[in-house]
Amino acid sequence: YGLNDVLTERMVKHVGGVKEYLGVLGVFGSSICFIQAMIIEQDSIRDIFHQNGESDDYDNDTTGTCSAIRRWTILGVGTILGVISYIGMSHFLTVSEAALLNLSLLTGDLWAALFTVVAEQILPSSNFWVALVLIVFGVFVYELSPSSVEDSDSGLDDDGQQLVLEESRSTSSSGSTPLSHSPTNVNIV
Image (cartoon, rainbow, N blue to C red):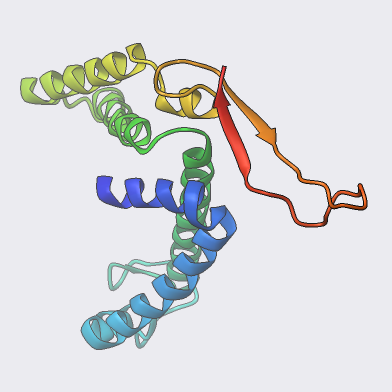
C-alpha cells in the first residue's frame, strides 16, 4: 500500500497529473477487476445477485440474506466511497507527501478503537495501545522535520540559496527578437 501511494505521488506530481492518473486507474482497474472477477469469483457473484425465491422485502428473514435492493445499495455506496477515496488521496498527494498520507491513514485505527470501547464495550489489548502510541509518535516526529515539498516549491536549492531564473534572448541582425528562445539559465544569487 505504501508503494502504491509513493507511485501515485510521483504520477500526480511529475508525470501526468490527477486527471490522467484517475483516468488510467479507472480504465485499467475496472478492466482488470472485471476479468479477474469473471475468472475467479464467478460463482460468488452469481450467488449474490441471482438468489431464487427472494421477496421484495428490504430484508429476507427466512434465508438470512438481504434483498436485491439492499445488495445493489451496498455495492453502489461502496463503489462511490472508493471513488471518493481515490480522488481525495490523489488531490492530497499533489500538495503533500505519501509518507504523511500513510501515517495519517494509520491513525484511523484510533477511531476504530474508540468505537469498540464506546459502542461495544470491548477494550482492545495492550499491544494495540502500544502500536497506536508508536503511530502517533511517528506522525509527531515526521511533522517535526522540515517538509521537502515546501523546499522544492520555494525556489531554493539544496544549500538554501535563492534560484533566479533569467531568460537569455538573442536578437537577429534586424534588431527583432526571434520566435525561438535559447534555453532558460538558472543562476544562484
